[in-house]
Length: 289
Image: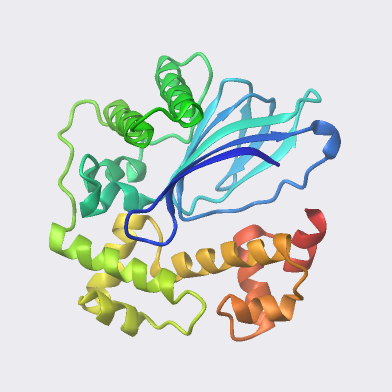
């Protein structure tokens, strides 16, 4: 379960751009650990022993280990070991926080590192780079907890430092490559995401979204995936499933009604999409909570 959650809302999109969670799940609760992926970049500091599956590769983790998941990365905790509880400090950031023209200190080129071949999901405890990131994550938590004046700005300062340090770590000699999109096109992309989120439960087509962005369908699809690490349709599907999870966990609405409320034209399509994102059917997911 999420014991605490801290959020910085988006400045132009109706969703959070940055959130931090402190997760505590007792070993005795035997929580259902399911495969999932999301639109956000995730950085997690673990205080548990266990085994992770990431894109089909097995990683063992121990207290102090850090995992970094780019957008749309399949990951699942397979098991907890040594009777340890699941304790995780997670930070989730939407790529829009990094590439949006209105976010000042950030820059789209900081996203390039997540697609480099030498990028590694796992930073074990004891690694000097792990110690750097651990300090930054704890600084962010302190800012959220203390809530001193301008704490949101300080959270972003620490996050910027994390992105720069990750880039330096995996790209120590080379110059950071330029952004693949100019500011005008990024503004168009931002408008498209606003349109998607505002009309998430309606019938959406790629032609309509690209037209709203003022870009060709082909270029829009290419730049969307480049900047967000995920295709347009995968982005829409995940956001709809996020909404469905809210209804499944917070209401007693039946699954057919939830499917319609989340923009799916049939229960069959809803069940297929839900299982693709979470590896569980909606019914099984609801029973597991």
